[in-house]
Length: 279
Image (cartoon, rainbow, N blue to C red; front, top):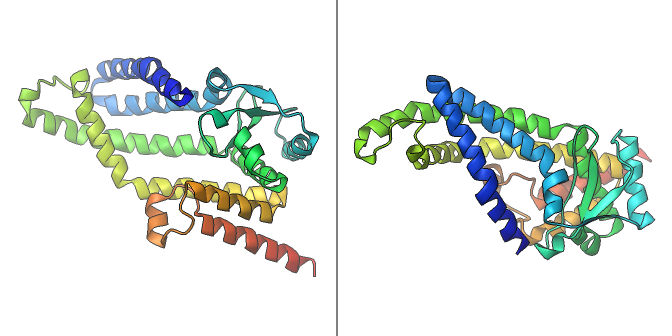
């Protein structure tokens, strides 16, 4: 039910406002619509990524401080060691919506916070919890959100440019559609079709870049938490909804996270090197 409410809120409030703004920009920018549209879309995406975990998600889930020191204190110690400005760890009741484990380190301008869902606490051991939280800290410390926005902005410029090249060509080829131009909302289905074609073609590039960022956060998490066994065990649990052992090309084209096999191998390689270094 809560997932449905979230989807309804986006469909009825956020999406229409975003589209209204986008088409207002299209009308004003004229021939440079694809540049202006890209910038506005990135700005909307950045706003959503920065404020949603802090101000939107609490509308649908209950957030409470983690009181168990065995869970809370090691997480806060890792945060302090990596200059993350938080003084508490929050948990939220995602089990009302899903059985997936998740966590995040989010916020900006004094709103930074660490949150983990109750599935993580219920399904995972303390070493697994520490590793997951260290991984999320890696995204924050390595500024992956900022890098993702830059990358996605470049892709959006390329995607809107692709639409600019073909939108008019198709519109004039089918005048009976009654689409006046790019600033006519009647052309929205065509615009979405062209964007869909573009992003389908560049899916391997997008997934590879995101997967590389996830691998960086994995390495950060191992070095901070020093929990290779917890990492491997958690990777096995993620196999509930991610294929553990895809083929090489399948992983390159369709996986935006390292496979379970790759993550377990990373954890065991890290552990072997640590043991070798102590000899």
